Image 1 (cartoon, rainbow, N blue to C red):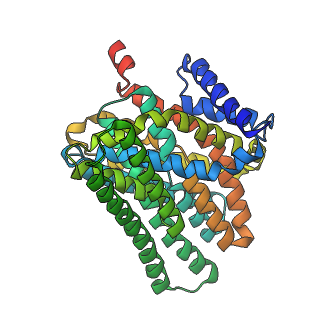
Image 2: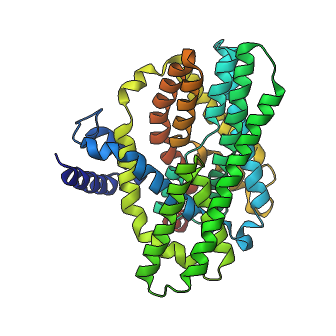
Image 3: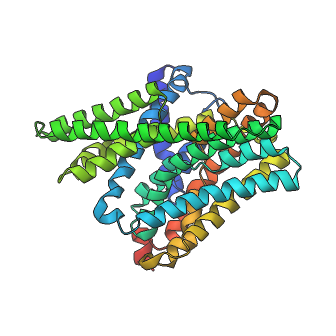
Length: 397
């Protein structure tokens, strides 16, 4: 099968599966991933190698678009009232996963502490793509939706910092030599990466805003906006910065410095759905179901305590939701279950730095990602539905 036929198969089968499973209120994200598993190397193997090889490029572009879209929710007029609680929830859910996974693996299974710390750090990461798409698909609106989008947007920053510090801590524990200066230096590098990513996005937001006044036609504005997003994605990748944070900053700054900031997001929206479909089908195709056999006890404990850490941490972080209502505190954790690109990237780094145990860590994270990517969208939809923030369901109630 050539690339054109392969791409048509991905789009058409993904579309039909989403419609079929949609009747059972299964999120389109889950449908796309299942289709990918069926037609990918783990299933029928009909996806051309060329398309699979391009998955990294497609992933960066789609994650950039998702982060850019999330940025529109950070307008000072709407974000000001919930900003503090979003920061608190995102910090607590990341720390909750880190602490519970580390403690469970170390105390219950006797996993060496430095290995448990690495697992805990990776557990702090949450994949924003699945959560954002479920929200877009269901057209959910309300305090929980706004808070959830903010939390998943900030999660990448926390995960980067936690992993940087945990990596040095793990090396220190493994060697038995305390090196506090090294830990501080690595933490500083992580903070520097985050700051530079945000600055990069902010600079290009100014460029887009400044020159957009000369672009009146909506089609031209769509091309110009997409070009700037791709420029930010490419620049961040080349500089070793976070694509998610750079594109998030692009969207945040743009919506706040321009009185007509939302038009940049509106012209890009028609591109979202087909690109998301391709992205998630390919994500499913790249998931190797055979790895599920490798989960074992460590993987099961990782899954259970990562979920518990996210739920408990988010609940504690939202303990005083103010005027946002109890639904935020009660259901926010369910929207933080997905795990994908960032976690896999961190697991790859752990494999490189710790050859003796890195393969076990990476294989476990790959296997558990299959579970989280299938269950995560369902959990997110359940949370939004339970909070009555999905329009048609809210009306029925």
